[in-house]
Image (cartoon, rainbow, N blue to C red; front, side, top):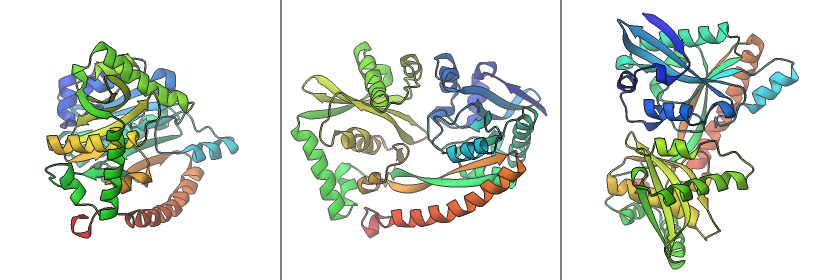
Length: 373
């Protein structure tokens, strides 16, 4: 077994990488990761790529895409309190290692291994943690992990954590009204009222594959993406060149008033899942956010037989619109013994609170009992 660490996905064969991934999860495809590197989405924001690789007889058998971070921006698993505690104690928290997709809170594989081999995953974890110790990194964080990876990371004695997102699941609905029929009368009435408000504003919504967008539509989509961040004093970290490079995964949701595009959202499709990512509008239109970001995506999933719709991080209001709470999990290696013990105690307390929070969320289940499962 030969272990190596490389600084660009371009150093790894695309076919071998994608074969190892063995999934159409868009955010770990070789071309997606390469587009992040090539189109100025990483270095300016504190993400330095590091790829851990295991080969056997020249065959790629295990790998992990990760990044050395000098901040905690764009991770969606908040460790700012940990960083603050380190600073107050005079201990450096940065740099650290993060195995996740930059600015993308989408659950997926983090430890790629041929045949999902548990032994290969343990060897990969050993390689990663050995690198962190040698480079004197404060910690390693594996975010939005699938269950198999969490099992491997737990076996390796990493600390574990969970939060909630809100996902929609397709119960083989034949149309949007079929989905509405699964909801309680109160929630069904609320959604109909929201959609009617949009229709009465003379707005129609259309989803266009990225590869079919015109030059004008690309520019409008990017302007919508940027304006939301700028209004909130945030940073639009993805470039237009990046979005164009991953157009075959991208679906653009446009809202038209007459022939003018007044709002848009960016979705990605893959892994039998639709992923909602970004949204923006020129002006305020009543209920339009829900139509563009939620209901259009649900209709798209029903029409194309897609099993799941993940509209992004946070947002308890999503429950009332058919999205149920789902646990998202992360694992954490902490180098400093004292902080590892303190963080472990904190996570135990947090787990109890999150369990109670999850129980409260389920009290808002919008589905009729016969359709809740």
